[in-house]
Length: 535
Image (tube, rainbow, N blue to C red; front, side, top):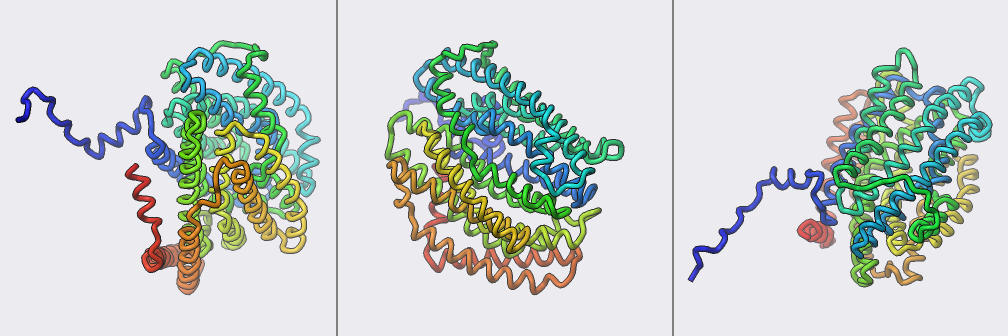
């Protein structure tokens, strides 16, 4: 007999209400909902990023000024990496999450205050010193630039350097939000950053030229990664007070974890610097490489970056609770899905490189010849999509385990060993050789991390469902080959209509071949992805 006093069953939420719930700033996400939110916002950010790059290509093309603009980010990025560890907020997440799990809220807030105070001060001093010596550093890095390019690059670099203070502070603040599984505010930062670069160009291009983009980037970093996360932390009630208590045990532990990130040089970061160094002698090649890399970064960000960012707090929680088997299973599961999906997407990207690049970038000052060169670079970059995506998860498995020395030593050694490869392939194949060297380097990076995780029994990499990965690879090769044939058979001109026709037929061919291939090979990937969603 049913008790009439029982609470009636809650009606199922509508789709819009579920979406609204996920977008609430105070909503604590699961691993899946966090990944879904970050993938969505990263995709939106990359769309806005496309508008940014398309605007720059239209307004400025690919020439000496844009080469100087792209190169202007090198010294600020390098400073942030050296002094702040580049990804120092990643190590902070592990410590902060552990304090929260142990109920030590006060210790967590104290550690946050010390790290933010000390490192912002260090970065401020670094910015001042670097501002003074920018001319000497720039002339050493970009020996192929003309004197006019050098002066412009120095000017732009000095505009961008102060942004690193806000970028770092915003990263640490966002780490607090991520540790509490609040992902909305950190996800909004990159969106606003891209919007302000576009606004800077639109509002100031006639008066300031390419420098308007640098001023837009400065404003975007302040408002996006810094101010938005600051407002989110204030809403959360995160306390902060100026503190230089460098003897604090948690701060010292953070320093021990972060020093390897400061001392080491991972190819993930250094790849852009190396590409710019070798390409500085060819007018427009730094810009064309940047356009190709930015377009390539879209699937990396959606598949690798968003998944890695969302996964780290959960990796750290499992490891901190000594749930070793669950830890290795969740890492392997994430890597498998990312690998398989990336391989399939790679086939389509390589097949449709030319119409995609041409449709995205060719307008204004960006010519058909620029599209041909840029699409060749994009084609070769695409080959390493799966490796770029997987290495991010492997690195975060190390960070979650509190081990930063092992990946630092390994990735630094790989980066140094890669330099002769870049130089040799650049001499042999010019700028295309640099993209091939980039693929080789990131392959070594991903495989090295995977082997080290297995050797240390953190993640049993060999337990990955390699048979399923192989099915995805075979399907990707066949689908990509068929799509390439169709795309280039209909790409008979350099018009927008030719681009759209090639992309449309190429995409249909690729999608049909992928679906047929997975079905014929009886791949478990579609079911595995659905099970992940259901979880």
